Image: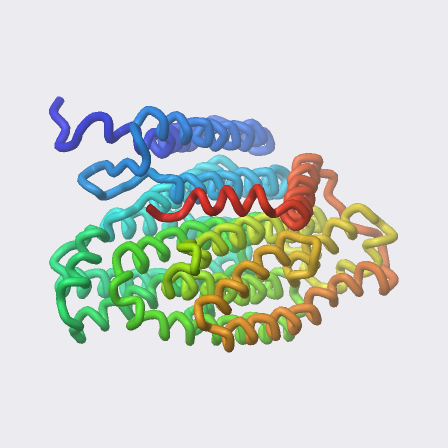
Length: 491
């Protein structure tokens, strides 16, 4: 058989190929596994993710010197993509741990659930390596289609069906906007390869066609990270989806979306940064305000964390703005490595907080109110202490990972000439203390009523413990993580 590309290009996507085959095998195997005996499928899914993680350095070594382009420049394997791939695999594995008994004790089959998680992970892995607008779009849709189904997986629950419907309708609309923006960029630049687009933009004068294309592409991307004014889907979807899936949505898709956001706008649209930076600045300011003020009004913890994630999307946009403004006096792209550190911290603290919500759920959609945390410090001191660590980190209080991430992001915004946005970010972080510490107050200062609804799930407890350790370690000893982030910048 003759391939239209070198056979060695397959080495670049070796982890994705293996994970796809394993996901198909799990989907087939699920047809013969009885309900109630699906824990094996979950552990096999985790083993599949571990296999993909092991194959990432193997692919990097066998495919040749990095960065390594493949399939005519459609995909690129570099340190930047490897960083995001590892985070995506970690987020997916933790989600499966959260789902073990949550799905096992429900009336819904688990095999398709785990297969869909793996297919979504495959899409995100391709997104991290995408360097061509077509490959990026196809990978994004593979991720999104799997997630629409996962949001409505509890199909007999009204809130789950509503969440899936809203996510699908708004997601399909945003995909159409993104695709139309890409088509306009193609019309103006004559290519969909990000490198060719950058060279074309640098050599041609400004045009309204290109300007509209960039704005529409930005709008589609802002939807994927739940940035205002394209955020309206996030709180409802987080509330209605199964809690492990809410945790997954808050972390996994955002990691992949920021990876392609950086590639599209800095590799492709970099020569016109002055045109689109004000749009991102306005969205960042609006996102920080909407996310944090909206969270103040919530009693449902999942909705509160949903609005919180919107606010954090605004913080991360500061890093993109800083990167767009160039390098500092030492030639460092401080904005990009600040984003990498912040996203690693965000993964740990957000997954940990959702993990405790999973542990406290008795069944279905129970234990979502702030009042359900009343007296937790007396009923389970370790769980309360873990939740307090995550709340401190989300608020940006030292010595936690959230403080380190915000410090670097806000400093990057200041260095890049966005002091007003940095000041707004500090003020919104202060606002966030009010709603995060409502949960802390409920745990430590309010007497609980009735018996604690607690799930005995060693796997979830272990995942939460790892998140606590990582949150504190990144906050106390950030230098190794900073060095790692600086080594994983875009080439």
